[in-house]
Length: 354
Image (tube, rainbow, N blue to C red):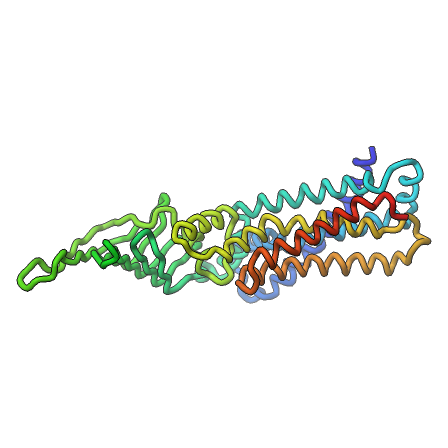
C-alpha cells in the first residue's frame, strides 16, 4: 500500500516537472532555428521529436530530483509524512518507492545511451540544415593493422567519405598505395569506389619492373570501423552510443593507443546517472518530520539548489573528463564514489534522524 501511495505522488510530480522542462528546453532551443525551419510540417514535427529526445539528457535527471523534493515538501505541508511515520512506517520505507523508481528511470536512461537515441541532436540539426549539416571530420589519419588510411573528409551521418588514401606497409616499408575519390560504409566495410592501387617494385634497379597500377571498381577496407567509431576517437565533442564507445575502446586497445576519452564517455553514460538515487538519499535524510521543525520555503529552496548543483557538477565533470582536462577515474569515478559513501551513510542513519 505504501509503495503505491508514494509512487503515485512521485510519478505525478515527476511527469509534471519533466513535461514542463521538456517544453521549456524545446522552446528555448527552437529559437536558434526560428528562421531556418523547414517548410514541410512532417520535418518540423520530426525536429521537435528529435529535440525532445536530445533534451532527455538534461531534463530527466533533474526532473527525478525535483519530483522527489516536491513529494516530500507536499507531504510535510499536508502532514501526510508525519501521519505515515506515526502509524509505524519508517523513513526508509517511505523513501524506498522513490529510490526504486529513480533507479528504474536511471537504468532506462543508461539503456537509451546504448541506442541511436544519443544521435538525436545531430538528426535534429540535419533536418534544420536540410542535409547541409553533416558533422564532418576532415584530414583524418587512421592506423589499420600495419597500414595507414587517410580520409580527406568523413560524413558520419551520411556514412560517406571523400579523398581516401591507403598506405599499405610490409615489414615497415611502403609496399603499395591505394586512393579513391569517394567511399561509403556498407555491411561493416568501407567500400572505395573506382580505387586505384599503385604497387611499388620489390627491388629498385635500373631497367627493372616499375610502378604497377591497378584499377578496381570497388575495394573493401577497414572492417568494423563504423563512421561513428571514427568520429568517437578523433572528434573533440562526439555524440556516440555506448556500443560505439566500446568498439572504439577495442580498436584503441588493439593499436596500443590511449583510451582516456573513451573511458570518460563510458563512465559518463553508465555511472553518472546513478547520482540521482544517491542524492535522493542525502536529501531525504535532511527532510524534517514536521513542518514546525523547519522553514519549508527555505528548505525547499535549499533542496532545489542542492539538486541543481550536484547535477551541474557531475555534468561538468563528465564534459571536462571527455575533453581530457581530468583523467576519467579522477574526474568521474572518485567524485561518484565519494557521493555514494556519503549517501549510504545518510541512508543508514535516516531512521534515527529526528
